[in-house]
Image (cartoon, rainbow, N blue to C red):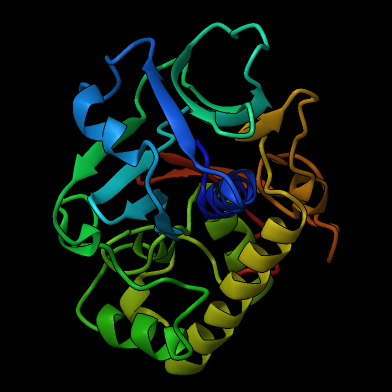
Length: 273
């Protein structure tokens, strides 16, 4: 599943594609995503000034005077920018034709993504309004994590993956941040002190920023692509995720795997306490 870095990379690509141009046509080739795409509403993006393209959690918002389109890539979605005459790929469901004769295409094999329209402030939309803080924007993330954890007995890995607490810390980046912080992922969130949460917040920011700079991780799916598909390279820097049985790069201990909250989790029992 695309996580925050992959979505941030996609957002930046979308901003670049729409710079100094506008949408002249919308083609809905398959409206049956997570929720049916309402073509009439999405067409409000045609020939309008797009005021802002930004990310909130794992959602990309395209705001204009008429309202905003809210995009989520789901489990397997990707965006591609092509010459408009380029042959369609299988599972290209939504297409935006630009004035510069380029095409932005949403590809989603499993169709768990969404493209919905809102006339209200997008921050008040039901998909957005209950999201937690943005980890890269909150200067007091450590204090925030500490204060909200005091009455929670959940495993810390599940806690930092809770999008109502903090957004975008998905499975890969949670595992890597906890390793760099020296925190065992099964430790109870309420039994971690303020200083360790401050350290964890620093490492979450570092991991996410490094992943963004390297184009994300993209273990299976392409999150953003063009005529020549490009993948993220952060997977080359992973310490524990997806490495059970390998030796820890820090201490040589065998990396363990454990299911926590229904997700495969990876850690070093010696480095993480």
